[in-house]
Length: 197
Image (cartoon, rainbow, N blue to C red; front, side, top):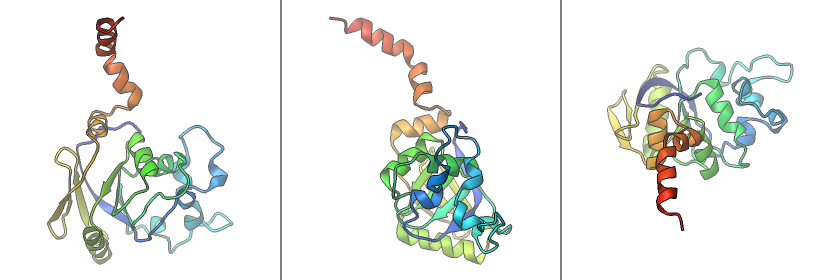
């Protein structure tokens, strides 16, 4: 899952629902596993599949006309429990970016820790994105992490997004927290030596 981020241009999968919580992202019955592998298969499980395991044809992830590594979601995405498994499922499915007008804080950080970029946009921009995607399922969006911009290529409209500078560095260099610490081990040792009492 560790992939360096730079500029991602992709078509999108729209999920214009508000208050999507982590139990809808990955139902509780799948939380027994402690390995990240395989969670993407059960992303939005109860929305994607019937009880007999067949696909629900009317759910967006089962519509072949929608493709891409960007999920565009309604306001308040990732609310509910703090389960990291929800971010594992999003990353495991293949999403690299989730765009919404608001994320639950813990879920937002879980996405960042799993190399998924949560992009917060205004409600007006989000509404425009949903309209563009509905009109043309191949609508492309460009997410430029170095410049912290997101652009709807169908209209040319662009917005700036915020991201913690440390997390930005980690994403752009494909580093998790441990990788970052190991990369800076010499500096840590030097500081400890210098500040011994």
